[in-house]
Length: 198
Image (cartoon, rainbow, N blue to C red; front, side, top):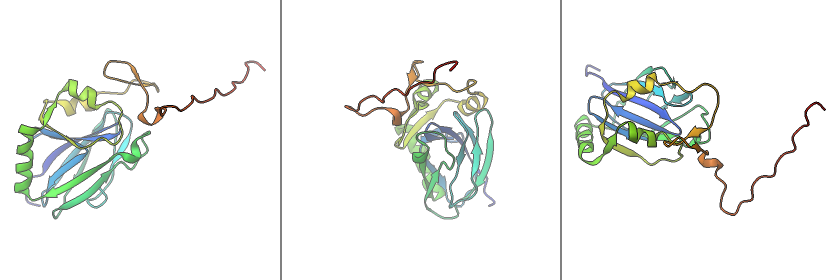
């Protein structure tokens, strides 16, 4: 295409996708809107474990990793809805880590991005702390204001060494959403432990 590409920054979280549109100053969660017929240049990273970003009808799958940036170029040649997904096991919620891709005419894309400024929330470090909590089946959301430099901060951030429990924004241990016992469910029985030295 002779048109300049649209830049979109992508962050994989547990278990949702964050899309930042730096030139428009907006962001979304679990929804990707792109102009049809316009090349899209993605810069991708993970704020958690390794993952993959894949929109099968538009092109290649690419890995995303914590502490680094990968890049991908895609283009939707015509208007339409496409499925985007995580194609790499990344924990309890990975199978629900899907997002909708809407390819719309360029003028409709411009109106959509502009409409978020008055209707979307604010994505700053504090809001990101809440967004980063492990969660499953997160509904689409939008941000009309995105703090400058957030994506670069995600790329520079590294995970703590070794496995450990996830923490809430307040620093408390967090249990996986799928590991929460249902009300009235008895606790699992303790398994016998081998005796030391014998």
